[in-house]
Image (cartoon, rainbow, N blue to C red):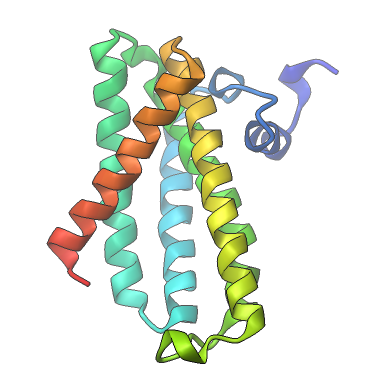
Length: 177
């Protein structure tokens, strides 16, 4: 089937399976904005499930700013700024897809226990599944950046892992705990 006729959902699903590339998405700044907003709203939903809507929204806003800024910087350094909208759209579209998978898992693990000793077997299993999803999402983000930067997968994986650590560190520094 011709990629031009695939639905947006099919293209995003293809990205999550490492079968399509960011250039398969339309160059549409409005679509990027919609995915950024959807990601922030979904983070609020996930935060509400964990009992911290405000904290989740603040972390999501900060994470969005970090990803948007670092994506732009990486592409600008390679003189590939023309790929920014599609690359950022791919990153945020996949983030929305992964969050949609994580929310039911959070429902399974709710309510969060007060101490680690109170974790149930289901909560431990869900924790491992969330870690596996995070690793998969890092791989997907590396796939996206590999295509966007015309770089090796290894380089792109180190890049996005660095972004994740930078975002987490900045969040701890600015938002605490």
